Length: 603
Image (cartoon, rainbow, N blue to C red; front, side):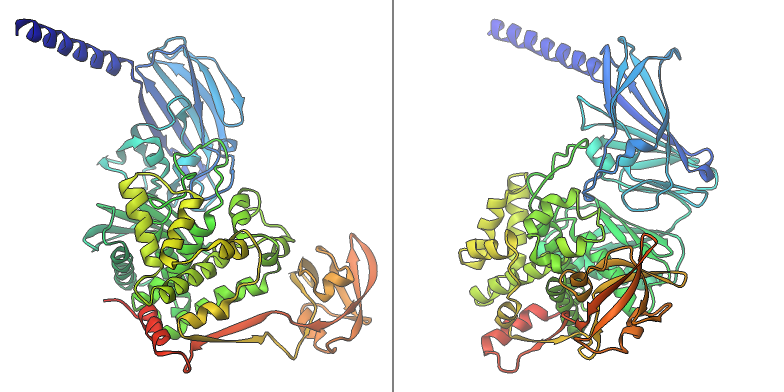
């Protein structure tokens, strides 16, 4: 017995000594941000590494931010990079690639890296600093240790004197005009945007969870109405999953003259919206749809995710074929939740659904690029559109939403109304996130969809995910007792087939639609359109062309790179269609029941 006690005591001392050694050897990180002259748009940033014992350190800056699949090269904004030890001695370093630095630490116990970062691109994906406010996207500002990419620490934010408030989902405490923020790991730092300024703050509870709205930029919004509507959206979305994974949540709203967009985060979202478009109700619904979209990402992508999207490699592209699910399903549900919440009428929602389906019919690229390819190639195509993108590419958001509806209709019909796409999402959340703690593969998603559609989806995938077959939308609408009418847009007008912009009195071609009269005749992007049949027009191409008839051949004078050319164009009729979706009076009683269950507002 004494031997056992002695052995146990020795083992206890060993553990204590081991823990002490580990604590001594583990580096401690402190990031700091200052904004001494915010009107210059420069942040002063530091990374302090303490308890270092390495002779050489590598630090990196992300090249992209999760949720926005484009390499943005944030290191391009870094200037005056310097490294010192605790005695103030300058340490040498070498930048060994576009976003990485190797530091000759020489065993220095404490190292201070400092630099300035230019921040004057106002979007939800970048950093912005002015004398009005500061918006910090962690990926665009902070370094991480290359050999410990997830390591956390502490963030110190020292605000400009005129800024009195800080909003972030991270735990923080204030002292004067400075804040100390706990950083559990670098992923969370990247995933927690920070707004510093004099923003309007609105606190409320929804689904039992404290929420906050932080709004800058002014505008014609109604604070009380916005809070009430978002509360309802949160409650309806939470009801789908049965629980809310947050103990707090932050909406950051950046109001601008014309920008629109959003970016999801683990416990928050950033929305950017035109400040004067909260009225009338038609444009206000777009804001609510955006809020519903980003909040739904709280589950679908932040927790229900393709297996490739986490842990993240911040220095390289992170490829997946499944953005059609991540963004497509979310785009289907965003406006659908407005209907479920009773914020959008039945007719208005059916009109939105019709627009999503019509997009696939009216976009030439929908018959060229499969949804899986659009997902995989988002890094080089979606955020880098050019004049031919409409002919070659498809949006995994919009067409993905149409496909999500088709799957929802199929599940409801095949299960006789017992299940829906909701059940797919609940299964993915409970099984892969809550039980297994990981993302799902392409095959696992397909297996889950097949479980609830009760059918083999090989042909569906071949047609609509890996292929470019035109959507058989009447078939899936009919499953929910819906009928559809398609009619040509502007059937009595002639069709030329270009988009243009005005530069003064000059009309410049910006897009030429595949197989249109202009395409077939050889009209090019950047052509200046001057005259038709020797009659000059100055500002309204469409109005001028209506003086001619469909199938009539006209002579178009263009200036191409300063050289005048006459091009014969045979005008056509518009191939684009608009859809009207409505309840089918001839539907079966079962189909009518499925429709009512699908379209109703929930309690």
